[in-house]
Each structure stands twice: as C-alpha cells, then as structure tokens.
Length: 261
Image (tube, rainbow, N blue to C red; front, side):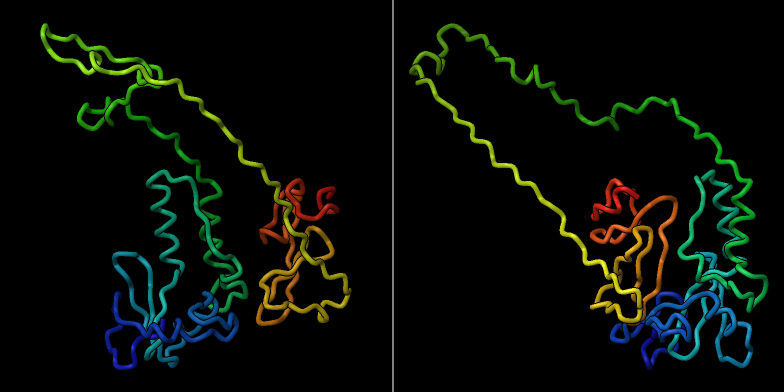
C-alpha cells in the first residue's frame, strides 16, 4: 500500500492513499500493489534499506514499512504458525498462491523456504476423521414446519353453527375456465471459437489487450505480461479453453481438435 503523504502512523488500519492504486511496483514483478517474497525479504535483511519490520500479534504475520510504502507478507515464522494451527484444528490441508513468489533463488536463506515449510508439515499430516454431534437440535432452534404438497392441496371444511350465514348459501356456480399453456422456444447457444495464432514466431503474435492467448498446441497457452508472451502449460491431461481461459478436460474444449487430445 501507499500511505497518505502526511501520515506518520504505520500501524494496522492506518490511512492509505487510494489514488495511488497500491504500493510501488517491485523490481521484478513490476506490478502496482504487489510484491513477491523474494522482493521483500532482501529489503528487510538489509539494515541500510530503510525498511522497518513489525509483527501483527492478531494475524500472526509480519509487516514492514518505509516512508509511505507499507506491505504485509508471510515469512517462515508466520507460515509455521499457520501449519500448527491447521493441524491443531484438524483442517483439510493448506494451499498457497503462488509458489513462484517464494524465494526460489535462496536470496534470504534456503531455497523455496516457505514452500518447504508447508510441504514438510503437510506431507505426513493425516486429516482426522470428523466428529459428528448426536445432540438433538432444540425445538426453539428448528425451522417452522411447512405442509407437504399433498396436504396443501386438500380442501378445508368447516362446521357451520345453526342459523349462521355462509357464503356458500349465496355463491353462484362459477363457469368452467380454460387454461392454455404456451411453451417458450428453446435456444441453443454455440460458444464462439477463439482465434489461434499459427505464426511459429511468438514475437509476431499480438496480445491485443488480452491476458491470455491460445497456443497452437492444445495443452499450452500464452500469458501476456506487459505486452510480452509467456508460454504456459496445462497439467494432468487438460487443455486450454480459450473461452473460459482455464485448463479444462478435453471433453469441454472449445476447439474440435482439442476434444481429441
């Protein structure tokens, strides 16, 4: 985040500069409001960088600031706390986004330190069987009962007291009514096909303002990062769906040749 220029309060919940749209871009990710761990940890370790590291006792995570720049992040200590918490609560596992944001060069210590901590804790972790409570739900906490469809269709009868007027005495017989039902026509929607670049020279392919561009190979696609193409691979027998922009099963492919992949 970018804090307000006149703001000297760097604690949690402080005022930010919304017009800035986020913190300054990092030297490698080059994205406003986003920093990778391998961009943060060298600055924290460098005593002359001007960054100050603090600890959030509620969230159990570190945060750091320098001038108007403020960032919250994960470090080995905070990841280990989360691993212990997951196992203590019997949760189903852990996930991260994204593993390429880890310290994969080992600039600040062991390579991929955050992912290694996660893997070492989860690889032998057995999710405990959930316990089912047999305590009956109290009557006051139960939802109101509703009559079944059969019961709601049954006619209701009432007993008339002697000498009491009834609307049935003056009700005229109603004329039979005819109901006509018209079905709406069904429409079949055919998904639009995506343009697949066939130029073998990837530099000649224009992103055209898109984030993802399909590849000639069904299990690959291009990701546009600042106007440059990066080839990405789908995993596990999946193919790239150019309509939904995800790696999906071949049966859901938007291209006929990819359905046979």
